[in-house]
Image 1 (cartoon, one colour):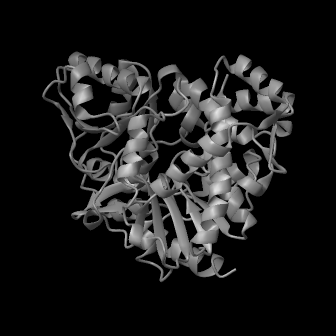
Image 2 (spheres, rainbow, N blue to C red; image 1 turned 180 degrees about the vertical axis):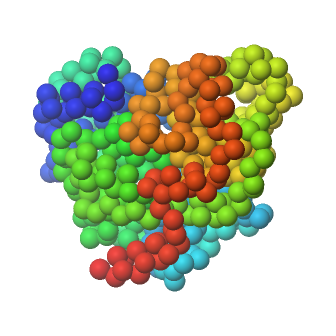
Length: 457
């Protein structure tokens, strides 16, 4: 059963909207909080890639004073982001979601950055004003432990029924405590810090408490698409409409496909969906080299079991083809040392030292399991091949990409070989043209127009 079908079964047969937490005379609709954790564990096997631990908390303490002098200025925008969104361009690390704002608008923006997996010195980054999210995270952790030990869950039996259906078990109380702490502490910080006119988020479904607090203060919340938005993504596909108070006012998406999905195929409760494109695509699409021969591949690795299985598949394919291709490996959070401890990589499998977009520009085609870099490769002008183990790639991208002439979903060596044969003499411009509905062109003009009009309301 596909993810959207499973969600439809849960949300149409169970009164999920009635699962509430009552605390301090407030009633919170918590199904969206739990849904994200439940479905993620169902798909991946864990509630989150970043498990809470003493080491994680210690790293947050170390980053507490990062850019602390920036907190008390007045900003037009707060933007919540993650340090993994930074890529190196000409010696500086740019946040690929929000640093493009500064070059197109006079709006003053503060980047509030989760520095969990990567951390950069202030002099290394392109952002004019940046702080660590640790101030919020640590205050929420303390508040949750001291003041959120008890709360009442209404219709808790429905949570157990969903867990039974999915055959997973999550930390329900811990999840509730997280979002309650977000809500109460953000109300506190908005009394202390100068308030922005608007807040941008890269991941709305991990900030429900913040969104509720911001909207109660009359601060508009805008989500900036950071990855897949489709019926295959559990956080965006809703068969039943939830209260809009803890969802963004607007979602800025890459292209027309996401707008059509959010406005017509799901009950995700936001007011506006606006296609604007993607800043890094506009930058790197200009750098594509002339196609020569199909023998050099970007491989966007993915953390966890699916990524390992994909690498195993390519290593076996490599043996069958006498190492005739070069594979340029782009890792994410998993270290190079971890891969080398698990796999015996031949000389034609090389870890790329630059960012994913530079990797795509340098190579002839892109290979991944279900990373959104596949769509980005198409917009840059390179064909995309997806390792479709257990139909995962089609579940995520099928609706958008199954009919794309330069996309291939493969399970076997024969399917991969046939894909490569069909790509002989492709033209990058043809791929870009076929992808325009997925990622709009002219991002910088589009975001400038949005900031100039929307934030004046």
